Image (cartoon, rainbow, N blue to C red; front, side, top):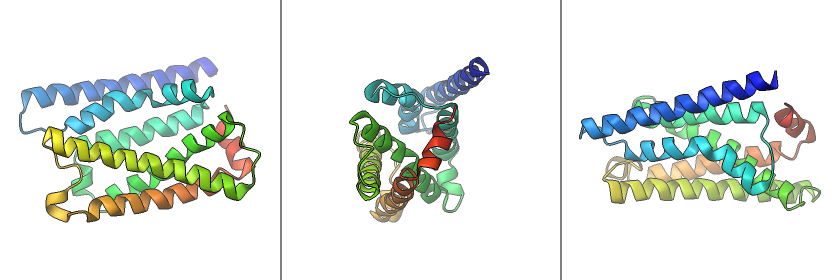
Length: 195
């Protein structure tokens, strides 16, 4: 059963990387298709679980890794590369809300790594929440860099000004709060980490 699950995750990861490769080819062949930010993220983010597990000496369950890869597919491949951010109302805000919940796991694993997971729940929730918000800010910096250096419009500053970035951060903060709260519930953490 474990080998089957590992194989499923490897196939999904390979599919994500192949999709990113296809985006790269399209960027080369079609100068109007400027999805370089999606290409960069699509080539790097599938390796997120390995990087996090190596840094914090943890192991993701099948469930967590599967949710992560599905999120990457929805956020990058469907959102950026298939333009759902521009065509589906509230798609962007929903993705940022979910990213806050999902990236809260990084804060959780940081606490476990530093053996701070026995602290009071209020501290755990705020620590996890602020780690997750930091990831949201780092993503907005990435979008800003893509806009400035690659000539993209990931932040949609021309059409919506700073509102897009601020609403993205607001939704990620709400998601971070939800994730921070959920990760203080032992049964929820056990369910997520169950393999």
